[in-house]
Amino acid sequence: AMTCERPHRAKLSPFQTLEIMKEEQFGCYDLVALETLSKAVVRLSVGTKVRLTNHQLGEIIFIPPHKPTKPLVRLENNGGIVALAERSDLAIETILT
Image 1 (cartoon, rainbow, N blue to C red):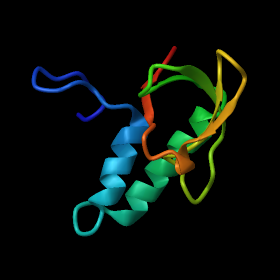
Image 2: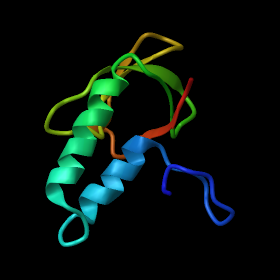
Image 3: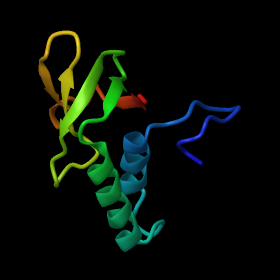
Image 4: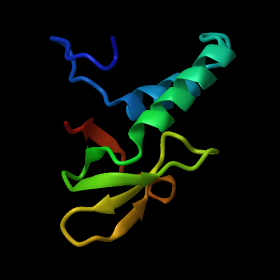
């Protein structure tokens, strides 16, 4: 439901959704299921084109195992690399197809 567009709010990326779920995990979600979901998103995401919350386009090049919702992204405009784990002001807004 969180990754789908709703009348009352915009859809969230799988990365934003996982981040919210991990913050709320204590007592709300099965920890094994949440970890399995995180691993599945990681496997499918390297090489994925994304748009960041600052509207820059890039490609996921690495996902740190200890921070699966905060990957390294190579920016399309200048080839620079952004470590989202070090940037609390940025997140993946949209996964592009």
